[in-house]
Each structure stands twice: as C-alpha cells, then as structure tokens.
Image 1 (spheres, rainbow, N blue to C red):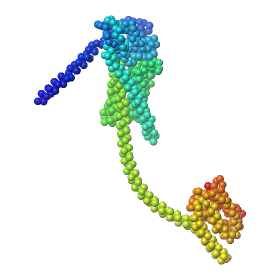
Image 2: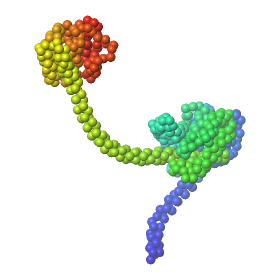
Image 3: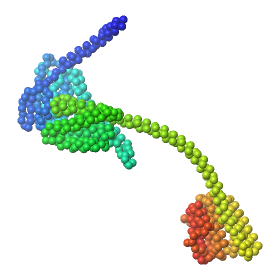
Image 4: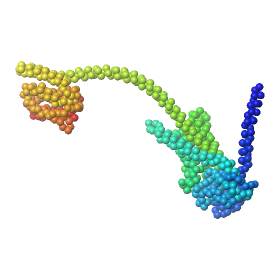
Length: 618
C-alpha cells in the first residue's frame, strides 16, 4: 500500500513539474547555443616602438607576455552570421584595457581612456558591456579592439562573448555583481567595521599594570586591518586614482600587506600572545615585511621587475600560512571559543589567499576574480562575535556586581540604621553635656564672678553692709541679664548693649567708674541667632568684669559702629593694663572661644593707662 501511494505521488509530481524543468533547461541550452565566444584574433602588438603581427588565442595577458613593459595592441576578430539579426545584440568583455577602443565594422562602439596617455586612468578593473544595434551586423563582421597597457596593471584582452542582448547582458551582470558590486559591498562593510573598531579602541580603555589606563590593541589591529582592506578592495571601483601610477599601485600593495600584518596581530591579540617573547619577535618580522613592501612594490611596478612582487607575496603568504597553521593547532588544544572562531576564519582566508597567489602571480590567468576579497568579510564577522561575547561577559559580570552590591548595600543599611540609633543617643548625650557646660560657663562668667566679688569683700573685713548688698544686687542683675538675653531679637546688637547699660551702669557708678556711651544705631546682624547673642553677651560681661575687678580704672568707654568689615565693638578703659603676651587667664580664654564660636575676631591692646578690647563681627 505504501509503495502504491509513493508511486502515485511521483507520477503526479512528474506530470506537473518535469515539463517545466525540461522547458527551462531547453531555453538555457538555446541561449547558450546562440552566444558566440571569440577567442581567435590577429594582433598587432607594439612594445618599445617595435610592432609584431601574430595570430593568437585569447585571453591575452599583457603583464605575463610583456613583463615589465608597456605598449599598445590592436586585435582583429572576425565572425560570420548565418542571417541578419532583428533584435539588439550585446558584447561582453570580462576584462580589457587599461584604456581601450572597440570598433565593429568600422563603427566606434565604445572608448574608455586615452590610448596615448600611459599610466593614466585604468578601465581594466571591472567587466565591460557594449550594446550593438542589429543594423551594424552583417554576414561577415570584424571587431577591432585597440588597447593601451601599462606596467603591472593587468592590461590585455579576454575572450569576447557576443550574442542576443538578454543572454549577454545576463552574463555581464553576473560577472559585474561579483567583481564590481561585490567589491563595493566589501569596501562598505570593511569601512563600517574598521570605523566601529577604531571607536571601540578610543572609547573602551582598560586598566593596565600599576593602575595605568591602556587601550585594547585587539580593536586597533582590527580597525587598521579593515581600513587598509577597504583601501585595497576599493581599487576595483576607482578608474581615476588620486595618485599617479605606479605609485598608486605601490600604495595598493602596501595596503594589502598592512591588512595581512594587522590581521595576524589581531589573531595574536585574540589568543593573548601580545606579551610573549616569540610574539614580539614575530611582530618585528611583520614590521620588516611591511617596510620591505614599499621597496619591492616600487621595484616591480616602477623598475619593471614583477618577480620582486611575486617573491614578496610568496614570503608574506608563507609567513601568514605558518602563523595560521600554528594558530589553528593551538586553537584545537582547548582554546577559548573566540580563538577557535578566529582560527576558522584565518584558515579560510589563508587558503583563499594561496589560491589567489597561485592564480595571479605563479600561474596567472586573466579574467579570474580574487576570492580573498570576499573571504575577508569573515574577520569582520569574527570581530562582531568577539564584541558580542565580551558584551555578554561584561553584562553577566555587571549583573553579578549589582547583585553583590545590592546585598552589601542592604547589609550596610542595617548597619547604618544601627549606627544612626547609636549616634542619636550619643548626640542627645552630647547635647545635654554641652548644655550643662554652657550653663556652668554662664554661671562662672556671670553669677559666679559676682559671688566671688562678694566673698572677697566679706573676707576683707572692710566692706560695709551697703557695699555687700550692692554686690549681691549685681549678682541678681547678672541673672536678670541672662534671662533678658533669651528674649532679645536675634542679631540686635544695639538692644543687647542697651540692656547691658541699663543693668550695669549703677554697678559701674558704685565702683567709681565713669561710663561713656558711643554706640551708634546698628543694623541687625543676620548671622547672630539666640545662641550667638548669649555668647556675645558673656564676652562683653567678661570684659566688664575684668575692668571692675582688675583694671582699677576710673573711666570706661563702650563704642559700637558699622564698618565695611562688619560690626565693631570696642571697650576702652584707663586702668593699669596687663601683659598681652603672657598666657591668657581663664576668662580671656573663654572670650576667645566664644568669639570663635560665633565667627567673630577678638583683639586685645593693653598698656598702662589704656586697655582696648575689640570685637569684630563680620
């Protein structure tokens, strides 16, 4: 039953598709049969002014047959037609030039370049197509092709393909897409990859030894290789080079060598061999090959010795082949995946490069196309693979770091919360301790000094009851002043001094000290809050207490003015003075500490007959 079903299915498919397939094959066979391939030519070849006439078989490879020489050639190709065509024909030439003219039965069909201008524009890079009107065709026809050939530019003439326009143009398009469009795609691809690799080299520095920042040479070698390769491949698309020939040819040889050298260094960087002694010697050898490329290319293209370039290509190919074999051997021994991917690309490129070396330098053909230009794309793809692999590794590393960081942050948050609680407790304890210290300082500087005065008066035995009562009243005034300060407007220095005058003027008078008042109206000082106002009050209290207790003065002047530097307070007495260079006593030290606490400047000037205490509040 199964065999019967299969048989029916085969009969059904063959009845539908087999006629179509046979018809397509028949059309292809008819089209191929209609095409004429012209290979026999009678040529007039002129080299160094000497012309030879010969019958030959195309293709005619000028560089191979006239090594190191330039000249002209005229090719006559005859063909006959059984009948006059009625549809347009086409002529396809896989390669010719460097400059050329194409004639059919005495009619010029196409001209490219100047036949008399050697080393000019080059039109032998891409295939050529010429449309032929059926009116130009006869039973017996003659095609004449005139060429100008330069040294080392692959001049000559390939076999001519002639026939109906559709079939010939299809063959031309197939060849042009491989050689012309393919070269354009490879050039664009190499430029994009090269510029991307160069941007990665510039923007992705890594930390090296001793914390120094260094850039990854892998990206640099890849960028240089791709950019040089774009320059080498673009030669197919450039008919009028920006430099005169043969120096443009020398540049192309150098670009090709630079591509191979930088690709080898790129592979070495992928394998991590950059600092190995053998890799350093290998790099020096590659540098020597690059230096030799200029001389060998000039010798071949300028001096007319193509063997020099063949030898250089052979040495470079052997070097890269040996390196490729070693690189592949190491890749097979448990190397990283990036090493193996690059090894596969390197192996394919080396094989294609050896094929091209044989085809173009050892056993040269004329119309063949290089395969290395297309296989080189593999290196750009491997670079993309390496970048993505590094990105994935970096992303995984970042995720691990973020997870570790999140865990550490969570742990630190718990520790910080505990630390904050501990610090809050310590802050409250310190605040209470600071408040106790402030109260003790206030008691010492204010009430304490007055009580001390009262005690000394009692101990002297010469104090009257009235005087003792006055001292105790002064002590009470000190307490009142402390309370008054808490209610003073912040920054109002004038009110603070007025309150001092109201409270202390009777006490100064009781001490036979005349008070002179030189206080101007002062604008409020914004930086003085309630705490700062208390500090300023105790500074003034301390100064006044020193005058009353130690100065033996008969006059005290209090001044307060606004200056460009700030608010200036001055207390001037005519007492006995003191030594300002001696170690400061506790009261004066307390005044300096209070001045620093509010950002003020305290200056002391003292001599017998005049002592000045100056406070400057910026």
